[in-house]
Image 1 (cartoon, rainbow, N blue to C red):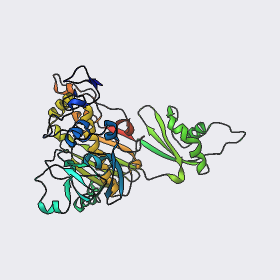
Image 2: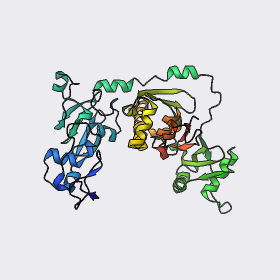
Image 3: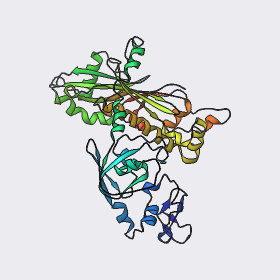
Image 4: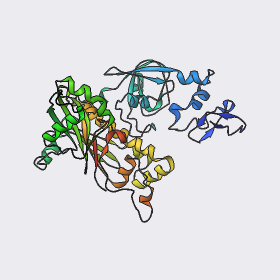
Length: 405
């Protein structure tokens, strides 16, 4: 809550996030309706002022419509007025938008199969395309239940990821003799408890890991593992697959599941560039690069070089830059995994390489002093991080190794 900029005696919850000002019911008019605003898709002020909507604010916010994306029959629900590009992100679908939704690249083309929409004018679609129902996702708002088709040209880009890792595999062949992942998997057969052997399930697990050559002297486990342990060890007659995250001076049991339900273990390598980002998916048993995908780093909308990125992070917040980089990486990994019919949950090991500024921004670390004399970063060597702690789509316990600056 805040006070209206025009009527300071009135308390209101309507905040214009572009100008950071509060407006009361009498003043609900968008100040910049004709220029780009990144907050517009979720701005009730713009919605009310442009639609002349007379319902109560709570009714406006609660009005939702369903969207079905084809192919794949992916269904989501979004509030009225939601930008279609944001809707595709919510549905975890890849739509190319190198201008980050400004409507200047013309790449986020989708086809309206059914339903009505509101769209901004654009010169980036031909008359022929518009007759076929093409729209730019970033310039289109949801006003009805919709069926959206992701066009063939976008699907072709997804399919191109198949085989992209073959060249990388050939170059790496023979260079890595022993594959030593951060998250190691052990398949073990436990002895069922008896009246003579009454130690806890966790201690029983550690005992067998030690017998198999795993160092358990500084081993811990989280509450999630403790909660899943009793069922996991009994579901397959005490045969389990245990995932252990190896750190420099300690280790942690991060996942336990019945051996019969063990999935393929994948790794992900991320080349975090200022202009573009490349993601490789790797088989953690053979070291083979299975697929790859590359794309424009959406942070580029904040500037082409690292100095401008740092300035943007100071003005608009590090979280904005972090979200952009994470979104790009997660979309690229989604594309690479779809070509393999695998999911993010199979990724258990991640390596990231990028310059000092890009890594700071990805991890949400203040980078402002990198551009100020004597140019000192916050950190140059990173500990092993869990994917779930930084927003990367992978197994939540996946180990993330960041190359030193």
